[in-house]
Image (cartoon, rainbow, N blue to C red; front, side, top):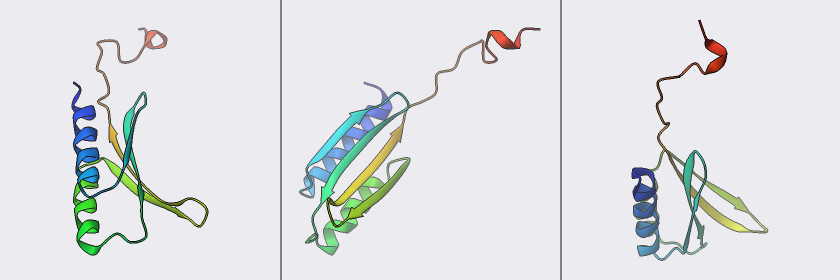
Length: 92
């Protein structure tokens, strides 16, 4: 299993342990972990949530009066390396 998927699964497991249902989605360049955050989350649970998402490459919290609060953590996938970095348009 790729390292980005393992990191995302670890973050999702830690958020689930706090009681947040999570969604993990794969994209071409990153793996996203999302969780709905209730208004009643305790201070201790927030600490654990922040420690979990600190393992991500980036994270954020989207809050709206219509959809509540959604936490998103993103783990970047490694960029593949090739011998032909410049591509065919960079021939000498």
